[in-house]
Length: 216
Image 1 (cartoon, helix red, strand yellow):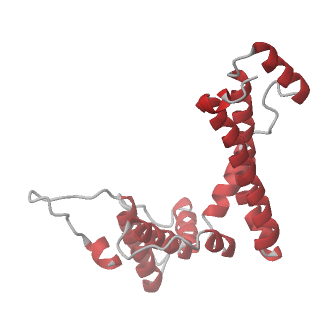
Image 2 (image 1 turned 30 degrees about the horizontal axis):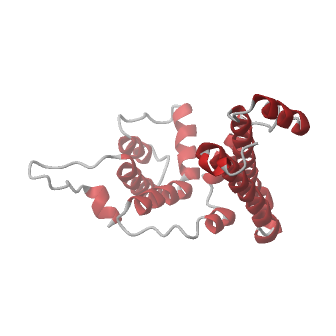
Image 3 (image 1 turned 180 degrees about the vertical axis):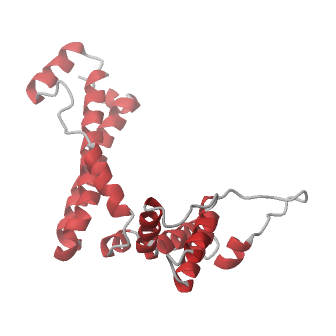
């Protein structure tokens, strides 16, 4: 119907290119999972690849539907829908359960996560480095944080206005020891650095605080 005019119909031809790109991405995801992921890591890796593959296939299907919806010939558009049964989206959506599974895995310091992110090279002092240090510190303190929450629920000590005060109160109540107190305070410094915005003085010089000095 369009012949050489398809190249002139840039949005239509781009959608066909999108279909190929997304299908390639889906195939690459499946291929990587089958050939590069060790059998012992597959259960932990599954949410990453289920999400990636489904996302790619959803977008490929959307590109096809958009192509058909905008095809200039009504008769040809209907014929293409008939022979391909492409009347509406059929690809299952990414469910909230899958998103939660992926979020849970992304928060764990697993081998498959290291494998997938090996090209990310944090530089000391940059945003990636600061976030990574806070993340690793929290992973290292998960048991202690659970211990504090349990003691707070039992009202074995009182919570402070700030997390640092809560940790001090836990030490005073013998819920944690000196080593655990230092570990939690270190985590808190890195956490505060990760979530704060830059502060400047009147000379537009960035204000350094103890969290910066601790991480530097």
